[in-house]
Image 1 (cartoon, rainbow, N blue to C red):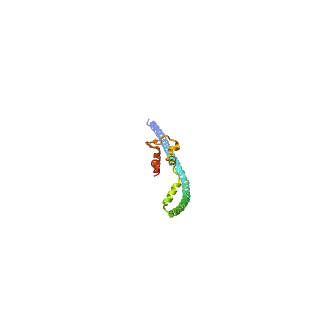
Image 2 (image 1 turned 90 degrees about the vertical axis):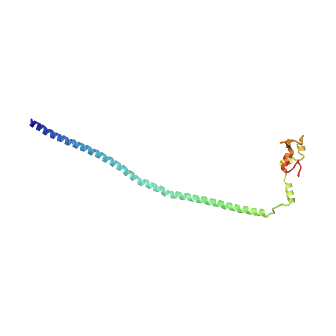
Length: 175
């Protein structure tokens, strides 16, 4: 019986040894497969990073081109502002010329006699026509318009007196 047990044990032990070896190999291979999968994932990540880094020089080149174009745009704006400044300076010079002309005219007028004599003043005032209302509302207004009542009231005052007061006249006559 010991012999049978020994043969059985020996065969079983060998069988167990082989099974445990295959089991270890299987576990080892599975571990290696996991490691291989991890390494593959890392390789993909590194490839993506390399692609991103490879795109950066092109982006930097585009940015450099944009920055290089900016001075030309700024120079164009400066030239436009310079032209506008020249236009404004021309306008200012024109206004200065007009100011000189007006100053000369004022000096010419100032050289003339400052006041008219009384006779000149009277003759000049008589040459001007009387104001429109003053003409129609003179002393003989009632005769012109055939008004029945010469003391027609307007806002509590005689109609004629209301309009002659602004001319310095009272009751239709000159002072």
